[in-house]
Length: 416
View 1 (tube, helix red, strand yellow):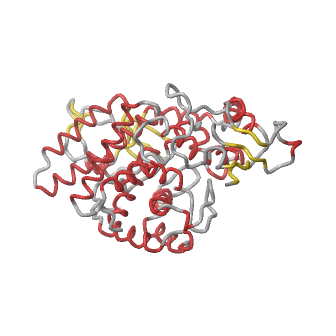
View 2: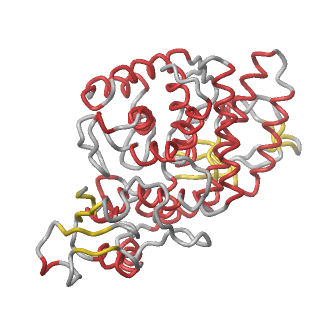
View 3: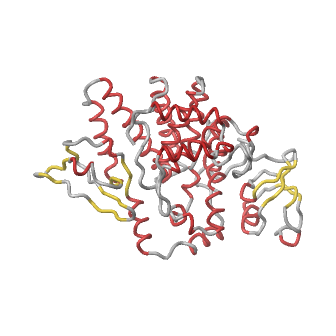
């Protein structure tokens, strides 16, 4: 079957059956050939070609799970032209540059995990907008969590060197939290915060089999908690998000997707696991994105940078295909999280009848979590405002799934 796809979606093993531009504007003498080399791919990416035609009867399709992959010893690379353009288009702003460097060393944590009066042996940092400062916690030689600290505005962060100390603290409060209800809440906070650490580690080393296995464990923990509580997600997701962090967003979306699938009546554990895993990994392609582009205010992005960001879906597919044992169903949330019922999404412009149920779920949960998260140039909406947005754009989303997602949120007792 002849199919039109974005040029950025071209992959080794596909059969090219033409371009959407004149022969003179393409880098090839022939317009009908199998893609066999990285050099051919780079020529397509570096050209002005926006779309290509492929023949799925003669080569691989976009959704083919076993297509040829990059070397398992290294993540997929951008072409030299892409890297050069991304570097040249970085904002020449020293404050922004320093901010990005500081973020690289820090991990956002949830204030709900900090107990007033508890002693901690790790540093805490406060972030408001692009200002980051270490907090003075010492009280007679000990670092104590105070009411004033918990009431402070903005985000709290820890240094990446203190991740294990933070994890030990979470394990301690989970053990010492008293009644069964408090224990369950603490256990869910431990699951959520551990998952954030795990996904951050994977983004730092996206070809690590050990880190990918740790992600699998996190999905199983999330799924088990939701099944055991019959769909409750209390303390499994972060509510107050003053800035965008890929790890926090990934965990939130995974929790929302599994809980919504459960509410829809999906009880098969393999199906739930595929939805949870795919949604946890849905933004893994952003691990190859220059931070100067990823955290740049949207209104300042060039057309090239927007296309670069959109390419994270196929970058993510390349990364996930480095690992054996990840089912095609787990690919669906990754591939379809920016699609919608009307076919105006990307990368494939799929309409409702072509979308997988997990794609319909994640298009809702991904939009909701993005809208409720601030970032440079965008102030987050309240949960009510975000749901109003989803209702106002109901033609883009599955009505039954949206209804169940709202029910899932309504059953959560976490404060805003």
